[in-house]
Amino acid sequence: MTTMFVDASVLFGEAKAAKAAGEHGRACDLLRQAVEIDPSHAAAERMLKLIETLPALSFTYTRVVDFLLSKGMGFNEQLVATENLIRKYDLRVGVELGVLYGYHAQHLVEACPNLFLYGVDAFKKLRVGNGYDDVTQEWFDGLCSKTRGILEPTGRWQLVRKTTLEAAASFDRPIDFVFVDADHGYEGVRDDIEAWWRHVKPGGFVCGHDYDQPEWPGVRRAVEECLGKRGLKPTVDRGFVWWVRKPV
Image 1 (tube, rainbow, N blue to C red):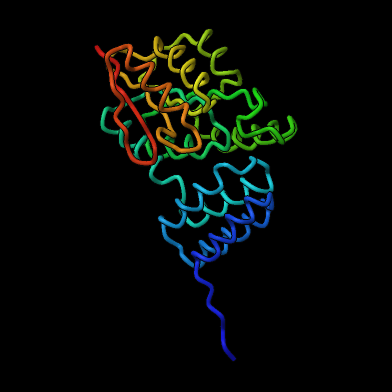
Image 2 (image 1 turned 90 degrees about the horizontal axis):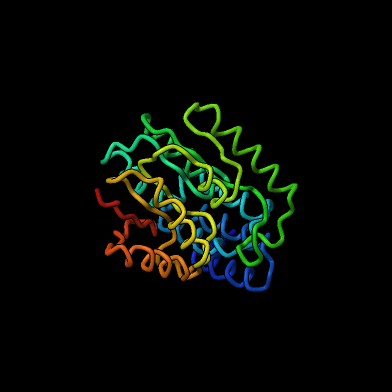
């Protein structure tokens, strides 16, 4: 009896075709099969890049992300880049704009024992075309409860359930860094940087995610515009993470 071996690259190709055809559930199943065959970080990163533009439905995105994390894979480059920045400069108080599943926040709180992190997320649909057009408010509420259940027991994380701009208007604590990862449109990133800049201490950091991601060209444009008018340039780190130190 002959056993047929399927190359992981073939499955990635089939998953891409399924995604293009709108068969998101099948695309996820094929991606998981591919990573079973090729359990490398490179494969996980390839998988993540493909699913980033899938609708953020519970049966699609959650299944894939949970699968990757169960394998100890996915998000590694982003997590390491942010963690290294926090550790190197002993950053104690931070704000993350955009929480969603809380995986990034969970890693930072667990890896950086001196860190207290605020998570800002309205957990609701804010505009069309931001990746959540097919998601219900019930889904957002359920995700919010799940995320809080993961992070609040640490004692070093607090949810601010407001929009990023509402939170900026009422926030009254100086912070060592802000991580911009909420609305990925040009206006959203621009407005978040401008609104939160004043809250960062001199010598602190303004940073974020998805710089140079093909799916989100507005991120780079907004970052370069906001920093450029201040005579600054971003450092682009691994995992599409960018950061800049606020002048003293």
